[in-house]
Image (cartoon, rainbow, N blue to C red; front, side, top):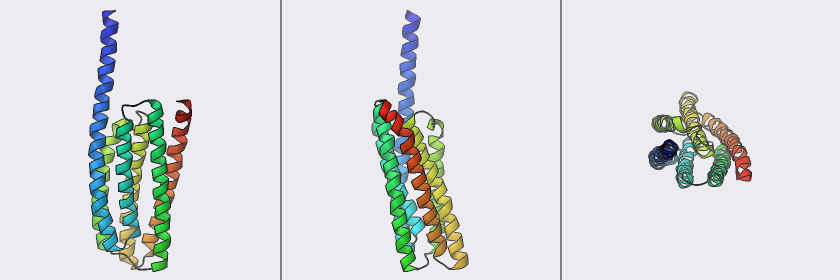
Length: 207
């Protein structure tokens, strides 16, 4: 009986320690994304880059996503599934926002500053790779952390798209690479939103 008690206590302590680790990681990645939103969105406005502003908006969305993840971390499976669903809705809204931004950029037709795109795109990529590395070991822990990892992985894809757009804008002196990459980013976010919502919905109903 004593052995059973010790085993149960050990399992509880391990679970709490894992939650502390998750909370610490989420606080760090939240701070990184919030700071990068301010820097990158400002650079996107100055550069006139749809892709850069879209990537910055995604940073803001992720900061909100991580805040929701922190709130749901120690709660029930229903709360975690609900948090994952909310994150899917946030990603969906970002994808639609990027699509609108792309349409506005097509109307203006002004090429963005490739230098600013390259500089801040590279900075954002470094920040998101650091976040992805921190979240890697929690990616399959539960639906809440899995959806959080999904958001961070999307960021890395978006950053690579910004860098590619910057290189093509510099080479072609045209706004179209920025427009095309922005459109592709919108499609990636919309697809990811559907995946997150689809994964969370059965658990939300079951809970």
